[in-house]
Length: 85
Image (cartoon, rainbow, N blue to C red; front, side, top):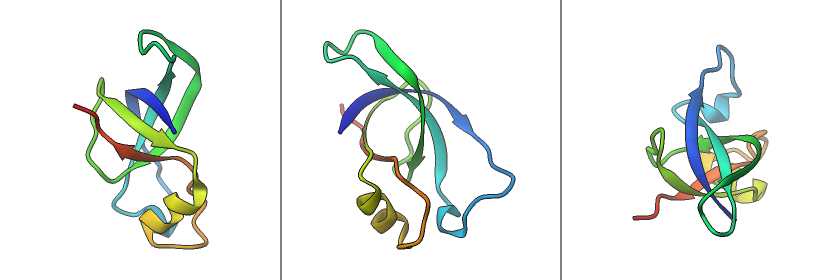
């Protein structure tokens, strides 16, 4: 699990049927101190409604992400777990 900051969204003209109705977000992982970002942007499936600039908790647990979208054959790997206050 990581904490990250939403830096934007992505649009796909064609996507796997399991991702219909899900937003695709670009998230930058935050450093442990929460002040800086690190690494490359991560494409994340969001069903919670996070927006640009918000801090989010994300996971790379593909099994949980596939359960979230309800399809065992989905290519989804990253998903939003929560939006901290």
